[in-house]
Amino acid sequence: MAVVDFGGARQEVCLACVPDARVGDWVLVHVGFALTVLDEQEAAATLDALESLGDPEQAVAP
Amino acid sequence: MKHVTEFRDPALVRQAIDSIRRTMTRPWTLMEVCGGQTHSILRHGLDELLPQGLELVHGPGCPVCVTPLQAIDRAIAIASVSGVVFTSFGDMLRVPGSATDLMHVRASGGDVRVVTSPLHAVRIARENPDRQVVFFAIGFETTAPPNALSVLAARESGLRNFSVLVSHVRVPPAMRAILTSPGNRVQAFLAAGHVCTVMGLDEYAPIAAEFGVPIVVTGFEPVDLVHGIGTAVRRLEERRPGVENAYGRAVSQRGNPAAQRVIAEVFEECDRTWRGIGPIPGSGWRLRPTFAEFDAERRFDVGGIAPLEPAACRSGLVLQGRIRPNECPAFGRECTPERPLGATMVSSEGACSAWWRYRRDATGGVA
Image 1: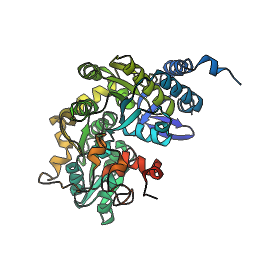
Image 2: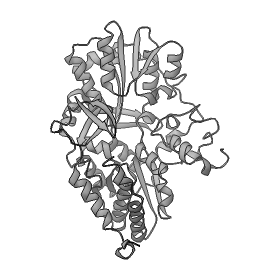
Image 3: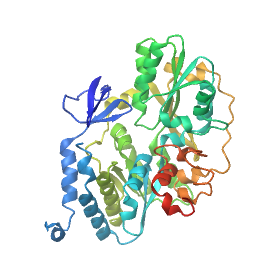
Image 4: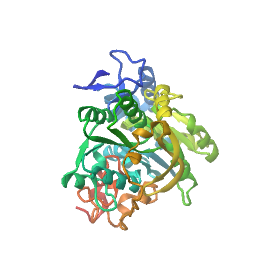
């Protein structure tokens, strides 16, 4: 078991399904169980891919 | 909160939708499988921002909605037994059974308790050794590892007063059932992100190949959803069926092996009847015989229950994406969240409940 901070609210969560989780990781929690450690690099890659979809002409700051 | 806030960025959503508009050359129909996605789409109004001709059909991925009536009736029968503590996720309490619901069992003196985790049910059993404690173990692949772990925890603690009423369902057989149903309109799927967090992507490749559909694993925030929708549309336009992961931060190709091992230890595949849809071969999980001592259906005599659906409810057609909730004659009239006829109006993941909360004004005749 571990304590997970949900943007301020803290709850005990079972880590049996995420044996590699470390203190400071972001985890996906469902009904009191962590189901995965969120992948920071993949998160950044998704946001980058979407940024690059923008039309370059429209993306110029006003 | 990190991993949420940046995936709700309106500018990024608009940009992704503009890109979809530029990509589309003809109408397409997509199904979002998961009820959590349905609620997010309607809550954020994404369906109204998408280009004309791009239709999202709501899928059957609402665990509370598809739990068979027979299982609800069995839950009601067990919860009514004197001395039983019946524990369940909150949504199940108001789901109509053939004659009543769990809330009414509680109102007439039954000890029905809401838990937010199956481990709470185990704790109640540990703290009440003189009571039989039953947990209603429903849900998709996402909830199966927690429910399985509760059975393992009960066995480890030597609990003899804990059992589970199991009615688990699996997504891939339901997708096959939808694709083979007469009148199917679905051309691509947004697969349920958190189901794939557990199970990975491997089960979906054969479906994509056999039916020639794109299947895009998709998350739940607005940016995740438009990313998944855009990926599916691009594949449809390019006539490129196959499986793609648009939810990389939470889903890997293989899923979560530790969670899969727990499921395989406790559950085995079985046929399952889905409420409103009917029997789907191989679409369920039940307890393995080695865990029979934790099976509530063996501990309590609930075999002779014959369920009876309310005639006016058309939730079956809603769950199959064949009608929208507001096309049901009972929607907002005989059937409201206060007096639901079907589970789809009860659950926080049900399509009728989502329409009631976010699209009531658009339905006409319902104030």
